[in-house]
Image (cartoon, rainbow, N blue to C red; front, top):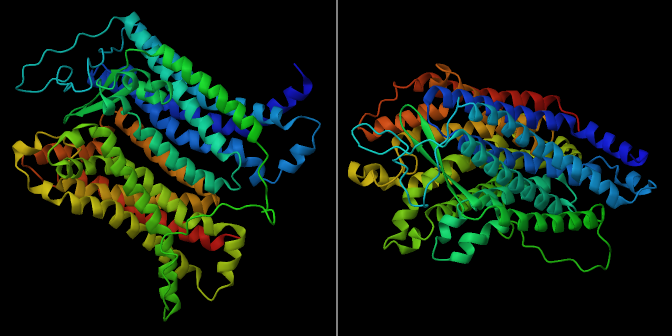
Length: 552
């Protein structure tokens, strides 16, 4: 091997080895969860469950790795040194991109190979997917009092083949998202900018998952070939819950391999584009050069005299946090549109359909977006320039931090959760027959009102703590989300401990409420959500203590 290339690979590996270890731990934890959960519950959806874990993994880790691959040399101010080396910059970019792809994709492949062993040995089973996007899934779920024909489990060889096909889709869609983010970040000037931009792109990428179900078989060309542009849409996942278990189902495209091949060709174009763009951004604006007009920030044109400094502080924090929260609300609405597909437009009362599905979208998206708001409202002002500025103002660190923390928290609870509860309020008083038309996790319930805002507040506080700890907004948000979801997976895979998983408690409360039994003393709610409230407050106080010791 060329000594120069060997040195470049060694350098990149030293920078990516800890990220690779985090990726590997995430995937192996997911494999352990799948094996334990499927063995205990007998849901027979091992391959589907593993690929849903890979999907969530790709959304988070693609953003973080793309940020490091495309902008770490800009952040560390080593790009000028790399330019001075007797090596083409495109070669350096190719090595950085290759090692980043390996760190991201190899864990998915290793996890699939490990999972193939119990599938091939008959320890785990997998049922075939849906015949169409509108199936109910009742034929794989044993519902008491309902006679349903269960799907026959696939043979070991076919189950392994299905896992291989789903793994290839996961690898291609993860690589496509990563490359798209790298191209978007190649000419950015800040990791924070790419982190926020990447979070939006990743959310839209995730929302486009049910694209085929949205268009339906009437748009035959888009239905069959949309996966060549958006490979994540080649398989659509569905989830059904009961008091004892959660089933994962899938709707697989008729054509898979040719759309994946076409998408790989598009990825080759993205790789070439990244190699040409890497390291070509200007660190300063060039006088006389044409500058694109930019839209002013929300509220920036509203000018008013404020009588006291505290009101100015409130005003600037509202301007920073509310637009971030509104973006999350918009994405949740877009997710409802993609989930309901054409049904939203075919319905005579589309507003009713929309507001009945909004809580289900906000439940999970709000967890991610609470970390975005937590990292965004405080991360940018921990940079050396603004950090020195705030230290020089006649404002105590205590007032500055708690004002920013509380306004950001209120933005999450009011804009995300408050708006959702307000527009769906009438759902609480629907009859039991009307509620049966919707998934239990989709419609608003008293369990949602009590549990979900607490979960969002905890993720917000954990993100604030992560940002104050590392002074890096994206790292703080990613670590907060990863710790929460990995802890939930581990708890769910351990018998006895799974009863204390927040999602398990919430789902059980929803199921009991459907039966007319809403009692917050049931299903370990006081212990679990009391602990969540304690974690929220504890993370906030730890963030404040850490911020007091920071040096800018």
